[in-house]
Structure formats: C-alpha cells, structure tokens
Length: 278
Length: 282
Image 1 (tube, rainbow over the protein chains, first blue to last red):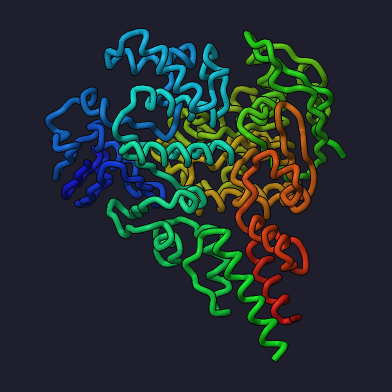
Image 2: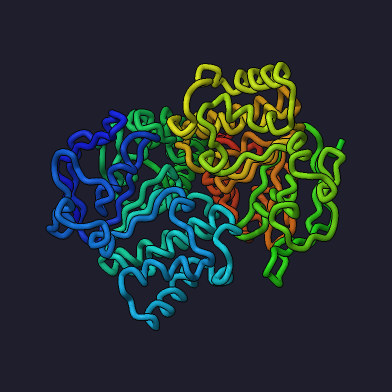
C-alpha cells in the first residue's frame, strides 16, 4: 500500500511542485495520473521510490517511511520507469541493460538470464537482445526501459508515459499486461497524457493541477467533464467530445466507449424514424 | 514537383543480417504535409534517418537503392550540406538542445556553416519570430517547458532555411493541448513557406485532420499511401493494427449496422454535421 500524507515539495529553483498532497493507493490498483506539463506528476512519482523525499509530510510504502529507507531498498518494491528512456539506458546491449538491475539486486546468474529472456519476450524486443539500445527507435527504447524494471518483478510499477512512441498493437499489449499485473496483486501507476489509452483501460484517474490533486474518480466520470479537462490541459477523448457536441439531442455526455456510443446513436436514429412515421 | 524521391531502398544496420528497409518506394511533392505511420519496428525512424543522411553517413550499414532530397543524392552529400535542405526535429528536444541560450542554439547550425554574422543574425531572428520565441532569446533552453523547447528545436532547424522538414514524433513529450498548438504551427509553416513536411506519429486521432496525405509502412515497405480518409477507412489499414481514430471506428460500426452518414468522416465536426443532417432528412 502507498500512503502519501500531506506532502509538499519545492525544488531548489523555488518551484513549488507539490502542495500538501495526500493520496492512498491500495495493492492491485491501476491508477493514471494526468494533468498538464509542470503540474507535479513526475515530482509525485519520484517520491514513491525515494529519489525525492518530502519536504513536509510523509510517504509510506507498505508502512516504511521513505525518509528512512535508501533508494535501492525502495526500488526493489517500487520500479520506476522514467519518461525519457535515454535517461535510463546506458549499456552496450539491450540484454546487458536489462541484466544490470537484476545484478544490483543480487539475483543469481541463472535467474538473471531467465528473467532477461522473459522481459525481452514480454515487450517484443527479443530480436534486439544483442543490439545497442541507441540503434532502436524511441518507442522501442521506451520498451527496453520498461523491460529493465519489469525484469526484477517489483510489487509496485510506476511508469511515466508508457504509451510514448507505441503503436496500437503495443498499446493493446500494455493494456492487457497491466490488467494481468493487477490481478496478481501488483500495483500499476502510470503518468500519461494519452486520454484514449486511459479511456480504454478505465483506471482510477487522478488529475493534478499546479501541485495539487484537483479531481479523482473513474475515467468515465473524469474524462467527460469539459471543465475539469480544460483546467488540466487534457483533451476529451474523441467519443466524449462528440457527445458534448451532440448534447442538445438529449444524449448523455459521459460516454467514452465506441460500442456504447454506437448503441446510443442507433437508438437516436430509430427514435427519429419512429417519430417521422407517426 | 517531387522533392523527395526514394527508389528501391534497402538498408541493413551494421551487425544485422536482416534489412530494416526492404524496397521502399516513395515520392513526396514540394509543399506536401505527409503523415508517416506504421507499427513499431516498421522502419519509419530508419527511413527518416535515410532522408536526412544520418544513414549512411552516421550509422553506417549497407544501403542499396536511391534517396534523392532536393535534387541531392543523399549518399553523395555530407550531413552538413544536406542540413541546409532537409531539417530533422527529434522526438525529444532535450536530445537536440545543448547551448546556454536559446539564441545560441538556434544559431548553432549556421555558425557551423560559417555564415557571415549579419546574415546569421537575420536568419536567427526570422526563425525565432516564426516560432514565437523572440522573447526567450536569452533564456537557457533547459529551463523552458517542453513545448517551448520543441519550438526552439524547430527554430534551429528553420534557421537553415531548409525546403524539407522531418519531424519524428515531435509531440511525444508534450501535453495534448500543447501538442495541438505545435501541429498548428507546423501546418502554418507548411502553408506560408511552402515547406514540405514529413511527420512521424502514431496518434492518428490528433493528426488525421491536419495532413494532406498518410503513408503507412509495415515490415520495411510502404503498404498504404493516400488521402487520410481513404487510408483510414481501408480494411488493409485495420489489419495492420494501425490505431484508427475512435471517431472513425464509430463511423465504420454505424455503417456496418446500416446507419449511413452522408459522407465518410475524419473529424468530430464532420461527424456532428453528418448526424444532424441524417436526422433532418429522415
């Protein structure tokens, strides 16, 4: 369980990135943190593995105060994947990159090679095993960064912008994989701008604005409020936007799903035909 | 008039046996605004590297076929020379910006060309004005927001006055509202300067209504090429696992259920219009 209690954090430059934030995230939850650039999303997730420590307030991971544990200790349970894979990748080959974390945590060699192959296959990068990460495209490098963290099986997985550079098929795989992690009791936290991905995953959405949490709830509620969306600089999902524009026809506005939208429009057309024939 | 011509392009990276590009043929006319997309590993990024000369001059490897940009056969010209004709904007501006001030970053390419000072100042001012970053002249690029950084990166490319600009997922690190602004800027550059633009992007829902043409690659080849509406409604595109925008998925599902809008839609506005006129006519 993650407990964030009244956490404030100011960078040395004077930027107040977090202002008295509190949030509790249970085991096996799927949370999407959203909001405009500079809202404090990345600062918040860096508090979870202790790279940053609260200036005021406390963060507890399974009851352990992050102020009393090292980043290495916390990272065993909290795997953090940064936004820009280039900040994370440095090895000569993809294989070594993934093995690095495992070695640091003292996994035995045979276990390492097993975990490396598992992660390579999981993220569709097995053919790059012996390749330099720097030859790969942005989306592929992001998957390598993700593989390095997944390989050591942390209980809590925190990913900054998992869908960057990912195509539709890869996104679908990620969605299914996140679900699977959830059913194993693992917590998945993503930071994302990708409203369509969030609409498909339907996680608990936490919306940040200027260092505070301004709204939270299910995707269907949060992503269909124009007021909340514009404050947090997110665009409404396409289907939601459509239903806002058709609002005067008596349709509901909280629709994000294609099949629900289809039913509603079919119904509307039928009713209008029926009306005509009367 | 073609400004980019790719003929039977095959390319294999050093230490690989299988080619990443397996016979790419593509012609792009001057002034086109083209979206280049395709599943991960399809060769988009590799093709972009070929268009700006990073392949073969930087990456090495084995190339066959032809790449001609602005009448220059890429393999016969140095990257520095090509950079005056074809600019490259990376996914992450942090990888592109390094100087201590915005102005120095924008001037960097021109300095390397040894351009006379007066002329350089003129080009730098012009590019910064176009991108609306004149007020950031003295700022340090690393202190700027992602959106501002990407504007600086584009300005530094524009300062070279290229005829072609290639952008490899330029808005990945931006929030959607900032991303949309950037696409609007790119489109206005395309129109005002007759600048040929090739944009690599997965998020078709953000872009389909901005571009004049969509090129879809798969397994190292061009698989689809045409107007956005044609490409996005074709069965082949769907079978490639391209993320067809939700609004078009909805349109397709309705058609399959005998609800026919006046014409195929690509934007939400078109959809709204289609539904309203359908209700009126019934």
